[in-house]
Each structure stands twice: as structure tokens, then as C-alpha cells.
Length: 117
Length: 141
Image 1 (spheres, each protein chain N blue to C red):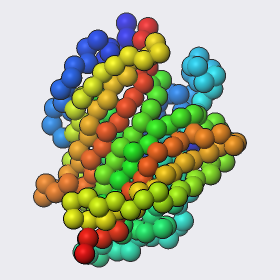
Image 2 (image 1 turned 120 degrees about the vertical axis):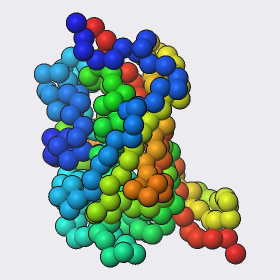
Image 3 (image 1 turned 135 degrees about the horizontal axis):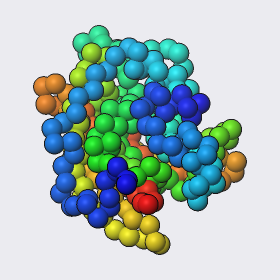
Image 4 (image 1 turned 90 degrees about the vertical axis):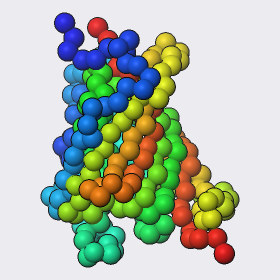
């Protein structure tokens, strides 16, 4: 899957696709693209509300740890608060991704709810 | 002799590439991205207002790739943080134009970091996506 993502995204950083290069890094092997993990998170937001995510959605996340080949990524989110900005309402959500029980991504994602009444 | 750009050569305000890079959103591109990220085989999202097939907003990873290559750097860089604002979903038929700018450099725990903003517009100049990417610079030899 990682190699397929490299081809689809154009990101051929050897850290993701070259096992011999990966061994020379602090990770000790190849890891998944951060953007691939982010795509999983984005799928969750899009399934929740395609319109509110694709038109006005935002995210601000940090990649906390590596996802290694063969691991399963679990995404989750929780609405923290409803924000009012620029005449629109947004659901601010705490979001995380985990692999093998370790948090690998964390931050905030916003779904646009609509214009403020 | 390394062929990559060195951290010391990166300057705040650097614009890359010099002119926005173009990316054509095609059915093949969207199919490949969806397959690579485990998206269902359905057409992603309802059709846009013009009846065009939308792509996942995180197709941004693909259409800013040429921007990141233009920024340069040694192999092995690590993606540390990411911000995105999605103004609309890319659609098949779009040609998107992206460009980046270095906004910050810093060192932390012995590693060099570069922060860059990115902006993507469609063919009529409307914003599609903006972003801020924080990268851990790869080791230089």
C-alpha cells in the first residue's frame, strides 16, 4: 500500500519505499507517508459530511510517530466545540490516528457547518 | 557531491517553483489516489455543480508534490506537521496551479526544520487549497 501511495502521490522519498535507505535512518526501516495517514483521517471527515469537509474544512495536525509497513491505522475524532468565525459555524474536532496502539497523528480538524444565523 | 539543496541555502521568503506548477486532475489520477488510500470504489462525493467528478480534498498531497520537489532538500526528510484549508474539492477536468514559500526555519533537538506555506488555485484563479507544511530536513552528507 505504501508503494502504491508513492506512485499515486508522486512522493518517492526513499524513507517510504527503499528498505535499505530506511535502515540508515533513525526509524530503522521504511515508514508510511504522513500524507497517507492524513488521507485516512480525511476519509473519516468526508464520510461524516462531504460538503462541510470539502468546502471550508480545515485541519492542523502533527505527525507524532511513524506508521510502519503492515500496521493498521485507526482514526477517531470528537467534537470539542462549535466555533463561530467569519460569519460561519465550524465543528472543531480533536482527531487522532493510532497504529498498534500508539498515537501517530494528533490535532484538530474543522468541519464547516454553515453560515451563522 | 550532493545534488540536493542544502539547508543553509534555504531563505525565508524563497518562492518555489518560480512560477506555479500545473497539475491536471484526471480520472486516472483520482482513481489511483483513491485506490492507494483505500477509498471505496464509488465515485468520491456527489458530483460538483458542473456535473464533474470530485476528488478527495487530500489529493493536495499529489498536486503540491512538484512544489515540494522544487523546494528541494536531501532524501529522507520527515513530514512533521500539516495544516490545510480546503476551499472546494478538486474536480476531474481541473488544472490546478500551486506554489510554495518558505516562512520559517528553525533548529530543534539537533534537527533542522523548514516551514513552508502553499497555495493552490484553479484555472480562473480561485483558491482551492492553502496549506502550511513543517518538514524535518533530511540529513546532509
